[in-house]
Image (cartoon, rainbow, N blue to C red; front, side, top):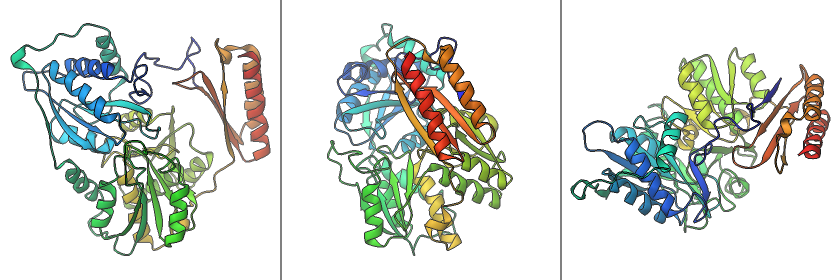
Length: 458
């Protein structure tokens, strides 16, 4: 099977000027990631979400990067200038912002974060009043407003801003409630890596209050060290600490805590595909799973698909990006989905990816099964998978006849024994070529041939 994500113009679907695959993101004080742009986003989004005759409000959370102070102040200025009240939460995981947007009956929510990126970057993620990320249509409407002059509120109608001090406590209470009532973590030693990010306080607190012995790393943010050699994209330190501490399991989050990677007691990394397999199958056994399967992207390993089929469950694939996973989950009434990279969406408990909630589901299975993490989280053997990127300077390389011929030949070669996924990046001039199959050498040859031909014509 071949997945080729291009439209008639040879560009990614839903190309937008400001919004990328997950909000607006970029390097601080460059391009779209300036205080001036943040203020305009506040004005445009505030204008768009002022519906009805009530007093309108927005909640704003952030991670721990230095530029969060600047972006928060600019967004406050933008929202209040168009008459919207602002409630700031301080450092807060992205799913916590989504939760409080809904629970506080806000008209919208904002998370200031560049997720797993380095501290030099930042981003703006927007949520609607239901706590879900905005649709493409909503983002397009806000983009249109960004390029127009905004009608400012009269002097007596500008908004007010205030900070609530119990936001973290509210989130801790909510995530603890996602664990079955009869489960305690009293006998577990957990090493948790919070990436010096938004969950540096809440996640260790939640685990500790549930009875676990907690060793916390990545919990000393200084504004510049978020995701720096720690967190879900850099699990090396976590692996070492799990082994040196003799811990039962390691939990790694990213900068805004919507992503989860696990390290077992042997120090081996467990990715999102194995986590989805565990949660999906456990929920199916307990009757909690809806839709008869799990939603993942085209990048999830073929081994996951085969394993779920062996359990009479299906794997529903979407384009890359948790927003596409969530859209399919909502339209098909599925309640477990995610990405190989660690975004875990458990829609019964959260409206967006929540690494802490997903971790608690894994920990619950660890307690109930009595198995070591290395056994519990190795449900299938991944098939060999290889991803390479090819940078191009212009044109439409995927429309080239020679490239298409090489792709067609590769598809025939892998037929029945593997998959081929070819897609343009949504953020840079790069073609991503991924193949997987039972024969690692064959997979490598297929990827190299396609990449070479794309590079030749690009």
